[in-house]
Length: 317
View (cartoon, rainbow, N blue to C red):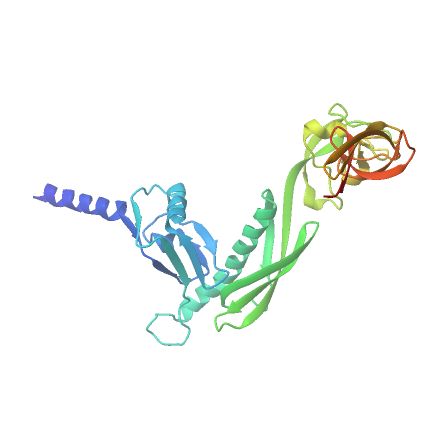
């Protein structure tokens, strides 16, 4: 009998945990929508989203794909094709019905900075996936603020330091600004001169090497291009051995040079006219350039296209 009893218990557990039904409406008591809001008994929680308003809405099919991608659950059903997650903070009115005592408030206060940090990190990683957060701190005067909703986040970066403000609603729905400061790094590979590079020398992989550098610690933007395109640039000044190749220390080799003769295509009222022009200035594909018609001597302006060739579309009917 004991074996039968334990077998029934095991089968019951398997049934309970392998058949998960997600209700049409879900409540969350904090500003983070996480896996535990969907599956309270899950061991490893994961943050799924942050509340920017009081509700989040998902299509059940998309929510199911998210769950399947981060858990081992396979048997999942939904009460509705649309699932609404509602942010419902625990009441602070002092009654005991919600069991929200002084200890709960203290716990929530300790989470405030972490919640804002997670929100900031999520936004920063969207812009710079390789960034790392070294330090994060909100204003000491706002650390006891209970927040119900994050409305927006604005920040500016000065090298490794970031300063910004959260616009939030507190527990009474009053708008407040919470300032913060952070120290961040962003390590990436940059080009470095293996030897002295003279002015107007075309770049190539033999005179350059790559080094891993915290690019946020630099006061200028390093050159970021594919290795195959490095030969399209030349030194805009003398570059010393060991120096990082910055964007302002190089120029792109022009697609056409002054004096070069290229074909001209003129389109007017459905008619295409072909001719030849002499380019009067260095230019890159996509730029508008000045050229002289080789037959008539007339100066014209047109857009440079791959080929290279100059195209003028006058239009007409």
